[in-house]
View 1 (cartoon, rainbow, N blue to C red):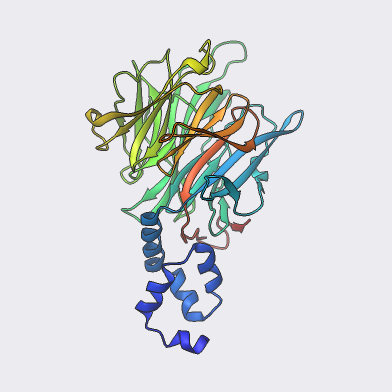
View 2 (cartoon, helix red, strand yellow):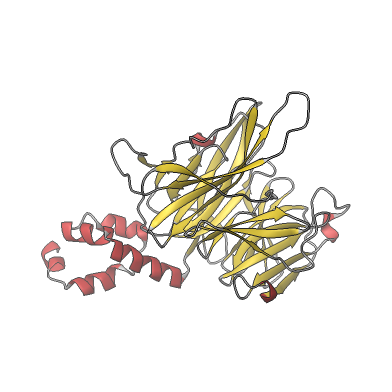
Length: 388
């Protein structure tokens, strides 16, 4: 069998291998030295990524937090696929994310990406980059940029993306540094921006300023080589950070979706467009089941006038905490106020409940496609690539 494989022309082998999943390709590396080398080449990885993106075989990384002890929170990650009935099945056993086990009451687990199959997972202190398909990950070293004694540094946002100009992956961290007196309000904020370059395995600081981040669940989105957050000016707008140019820019939202004292906002991807989800504030509504959810898509990225309202969702019979993602351009994934994972079908108006839950407000979801993208280590003394 091995001799027959060796006789096949390389273009035929590539054409054949591109039809297989990442899981199968990882097994095929054992067939021959030639296949092992071919499957790991950048050219083949890019070809496979393009094919997977076209076929849209989407999977879900689902993370939630449980209270393990009175003062300890434990994070669990599930890697999910679906069957023909949109029921969720585990790709492999749940993963205990021990690096994110916390004694803090505040829950700040975020999933950012995906970017070429890679996902960033963070609690604002620890940052993990992982490839769910190859089951490899790295825990980034902490940023060396702290703050003087008597001051406090608060992480306001984390971003992750790919710089196509230098062929490198980057993590950006937005922080506020302010005087932290023991008996008074904090002093004026000083914004700080740190960037981690995976290619050189190190942090650096940028001389940039940014407005205050308006943090909400499902509010950090990587799209078109830029990371997006909500910020507060006179109204709510979107702040974009270009991963390649490392420049901030402002993007306006639809006129009816800019108020601070009304709905909440989330970002997602629908029909390959940046998508804004306007949903009722679960803390201020007298009866959340009477409120509507509006979904807007930006037809031409970066042009504020191209926002169009795509869906208005009727009241959901279960109180909603926040949206999580949009899956297969059809299912709006949500977390309820009681910490359960549900989906709303945008085409049939049907509600689907999954047998998955966690500590209230702790559910996070990211939709991704599998890819062979490798997480490389620069040197023996650099960040260690690990397997889960």
